[in-house]
Image 1 (cartoon, rainbow, N blue to C red):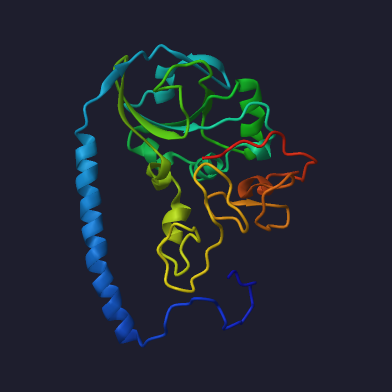
Image 2 (cartoon, rainbow, N blue to C red):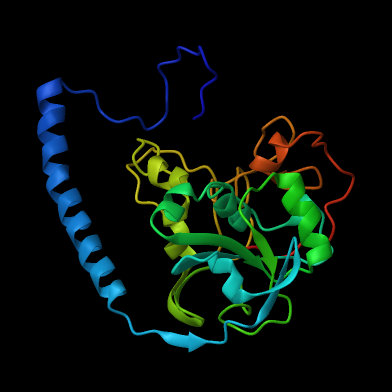
Length: 271
């Protein structure tokens, strides 16, 4: 499906039918009615989310970051609200062996300036030990603060792979919202843009017209088989979608000095 820049091939598989502009506009306006309804329902869900009750937590619980152990309250950076992404971690795995789903999510959140302007801080939490996490963060070039929550109970620690929201009222800390799975997708703008394209995400679960290509067959909790589905975004140094000892999440190939390694380390299921 992917064409090389400058490739003028007119034989793309499963491409949409060709119509005149007026016909396209009529179809587009019909779809717009459904899109607006979807937007309004999303607004209603967000309103309900803002009305959820909350749970008080111990804000003095310590997490470990670049400056050593600090109370969780410090992650608010003096602001009233905090959003964290809880990044999965595989102990002892090399950089390319870390979770591609979490890598993709964290990569899309390298700048929180607009959140900060609205009084919201952002941080990444992970269950990995700080001595392993620190070199990974440096290698990836992440600019947002990371903290190890090794040994910390949920909802600050515990199971990873979640977006979690907290509210601060003076020195009191409250849990207000948590989501996981596809609930994490708002952070990943690439997925939203892919949903607007004629070929979509290229994942097996999508409802596509007959003849539309599927990049990979995703099985929940495992890497895709065959060609790689975009959720995992793994490739080798040449950009070829693959899974193996020299593959890693695509953003890692952009790091200075990135190169293939001989072994991937222990293979573990990914979310």
